[in-house]
Amino acid sequence: MDNAAPQSPAGLSTTATWLLNQSASHAARLLNEGFAAHDLRGYHYRLLTALAEDGPASQADLGRRCGIDRSDVVAAINDLAGRGLVVRAPDPADRRRNVISATDAGTDEARRMGATLEHVQADLLAPLSATEREQLTRLLTRLLHHHSRH
Amino acid sequence: MDNAAPQSPAGLSTTATWLLNQSASHAARLLNEGFAAHDLRGYHYRLLTALAEDGPASQADLGRRCGIDRSDVVAAINDLAGRGLVVRAPDPADRRRNVISATDAGTDEARRMGATLEHVQADLLAPLSATEREQLTRLLTRLLHHHSRH
DNA sequence: GGTGTTACGTTGGTTCGACCAACGTTGGTT
DNA sequence: AACCAACGTTGGTCGAACCAACGTAACACC
Image 1 (cartoon, protein in one colour):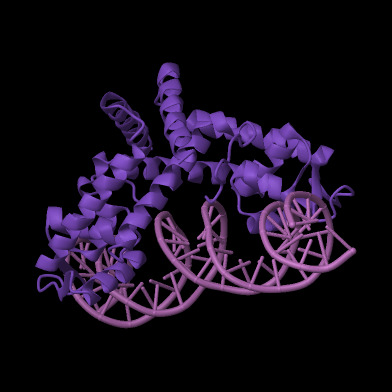
Image 2 (tube, rainbow over the protein chains, first blue to last red):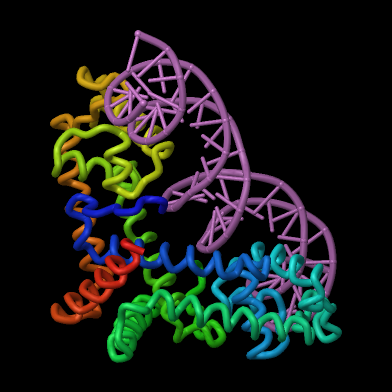
């Protein structure tokens, strides 16, 4: 969005879908700009954080937990492994699986990216008071929860 | 998102960026499924609606009003023109410009897509009460307005 | 009245997130 | 033993959002 003022996109400006879209895309851009300093992207952060917080897991499991397609997990884990942030080892108990674990460096990076995320979040939510932020979070959570159980 | 239950994406589930992203992507998917019946996509709808509501405009203007890059406007207008929903004519007053106008068919299609949008919107916001919807709209609007004048 | 700057439309890219289909391997079921 | 389901992997597709560059045209200034 290089537009200084997209102003009034016709009658869209009042629709929730438009507002959601714009907000999310704005958030995503801020986030990517932040993550760029780590030379990593959203997928990497999700996976790394999942590993750091919930411990080792198979790729399929990670994909399920992070909402990332199996095939995309492969590439992202490749990246992370290539940087030593993560280790891929065959699961002795099930030879179909790989067990992915975060290394110490990976855990560190997850922490650092988490800090970046919080900073970005603060920027994004700057115009909202604490209670408003909580309101927004609650509303969106309700929305998602409703639709996740389709 | 083919996951029936992405469940708890690590500690992300409480971050506004994550919630925004998920909500928006859900909304976008619903919307695209709806628009698929018209064999058109988001860009087309935005442009068509802008034309139908605010009248003819140059491509650059449209891009600015809809938050779409100039180069992407070209392709979308090509599609719309190829279907007779829109007419592209050189601007006699400024030979750099094309004046894009919605045809009657285009205005009709805009109206139909608008109906689809409302239907999708109702689905999306189903779990929220009227006041909650208004709350959400207000919060997101505040967010966007704040960041648009960076 | 030239000269430089800006705006416009267009072409041709790139990136990122989200998907999908298919294959070979392995594990469980029956 | 035969089948089916899950796993990792390869190799795509798609839409949205961008960016750089070019030629043409309008505008501003001096």
